[in-house]
Image 1: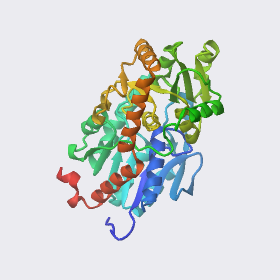
Image 2: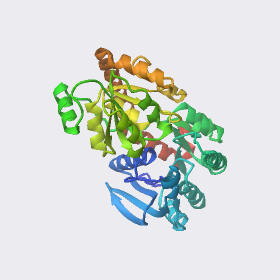
Image 3: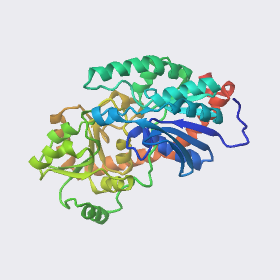
Image 4: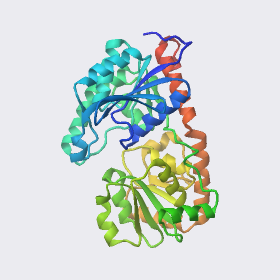
Length: 394
């Protein structure tokens, strides 16, 4: 397949879910699609949904294939099972596209897109979001390993570029057969205009009042799903009189015991739209996410862009980011360590100011979505014209 450089690039982006479904991969795909469209690309997203259909959203064509989502409802595993139309849709849109961009190798939508790209000889670019993720179910763990050893290996070997967000995932991709010179570090982007610091104390007070949060005291925020991987339970256990914990996300049932037993120290805001989440960052003083096997979660980037102090797990995946460890607190994943460090941060307003200032400056420099989109476009063009690809030359 050849592309006419005089016209806009046609990109088929593939994600197992897409908004309004909530989750990290779909949020990234959504933002990439919008910013690529704003840069003049023609973007079609192939995804799953409650029903099949084609819509245009923010200038992006979204093709949904009806899927069964029972595994997520019953076991908390976000693995939609699309209907038989998936492969036919994938082939149709791969034939239309100049390049196919597949988000993560784990999903049936990805396998269909990989097959379609091979059948239509359309070049592939991949973003691998995670390595193997620990799960309490041994069966889920075995399925992960089997999927990555088969479809994952085929995708990593066949992609012209493989984007990863941290060094652990990069090593994982190389272990599956991705050529080292094709594995590229690409942090997620963040909307640095939406996620911005408070202008002054009066704005923070107003946001707290509007959200029903207390005016006095240091507020420590958690944003995400209430699942063990995210460490919400560790943070709950680290509750302390020196600060109050604020949770945004779900499901609410996971917090019910804490809310009844520690109402004074734990506050729950529910699941919020992005604009409301941005306001919550501004209303709080510290962001805490003791997660595991994530590398660099999008919520950490949002908190940094919002200019508040950030505490998260000391994950080896952060190595590629070169963070100042005095300004972003990377700690061991245990309750007592969390409590001690949060006490220190809560008690030192100047430290919080310095951490927030560093975080904001870092986010503006490294996480702007337009820059992210530009790097994707460069990779797409290199995939279409591999003889001139700097990635292939190393």
